[in-house]
Length: 343
Image (cartoon, rainbow, N blue to C red):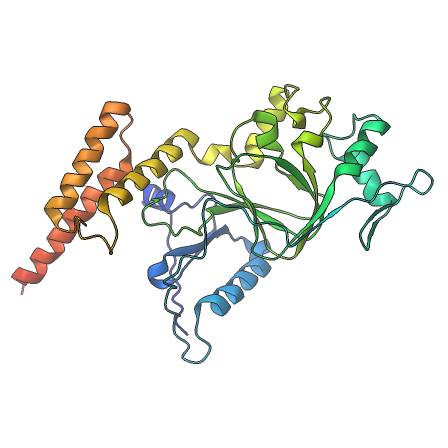
């Protein structure tokens, strides 16, 4: 089985560990050959069941069951990092019975206990009048997502608020330290939290008007109540028409890990990475600058461009230059075959 375990202490390695996107200790990262990092999550004793499930999925997805070797990376990119997955089913709420207070959605019946939770325990709903709540529920949808579905993607515009009816999701955050040139497109970042039944997500983008601060991925089949922002009464901060308190803003910032990354820096990194990729071309382009001189020239041009637009020079471009220097040193060692030690 092509699995190698390695352990690293943070002592003396803080900057390097931070550059790997580690947000908590202890943490576990899975890499799949040349594909790079595919999982990054905190893993204390209570998270061992999660470790087992993720390791099982890694083996199923990445290891050939016959040869017990890593599968070759797909030549076709199946993950579009700009999109969010649609629900496999999405049903409109049929309505709330005034006598029984039971809601039906297709063949699913939502009972009194669930309705009471939505009505009185969701902090954004509890101040609604009965008329406002019933009107909102009549427009709600029950959306079902398959395991692995990316329900929300970091950086996208928020349009909906979700309450989990069943299942579980992970909150993942990309940090400003991850290299967008080498990080796989399907990598969502470090897992900072897991949400289960009756938890909710999607509120921060609606409240602040800012892009999604994190990605949400279903880790098992998950069913959610989905509320579109256009259907939310203006008396709620979720509508974007009412200003949230500073305490509420601090609470949602902490929930989605805004203390672990810099939004402006990350947006600059991704834009710069895209510029570099376009400048470098592709394997089908005859104008690919593959030589050391051409790559160094491309990096220098991007550095000058960045200086002209913003004094905050990204460490990403500096790292590209360092990689080229390291490669030259390695080539020199192979060519000269030096003798090491006192022998």
